[in-house]
Image 1 (cartoon, rainbow, N blue to C red):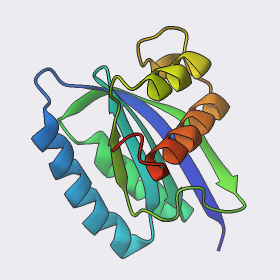
Image 2 (image 1 turned 180 degrees about the vertical axis):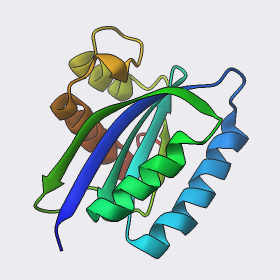
Image 3 (image 1 turned 30 degrees about the vertical axis):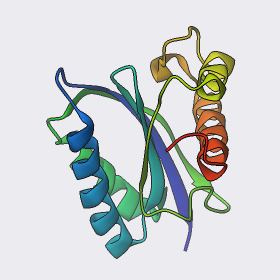
Length: 144
């Protein structure tokens, strides 16, 4: 079976709070595990950047369902491509809320046009590299 990766960005609606992220994570973990989707969702400065990995059909169906979620607007597809292996295979979904840690800000500055998390300005490769580095910070316990 071929594997695919989809990366998209969207803007959170006004008033989105931590309990909303917990709800997103819980539902995503349950739904994704059933269909073999893995990935990561980062959130900061009212912006989402998410990666999904799995079969083309399941990734497409999951993305279409995500687009209907009223907790975000202005979704933009950054990348959709066939991949050799999963980079985020340890999680059916992981939500990382970006904070003020210096290590996080350094990564944002490395891949973004400003100190504010603005994934709309990132290329597909920059987005992927950002999420990979964020995963490393999470695994080291720097972000949670």
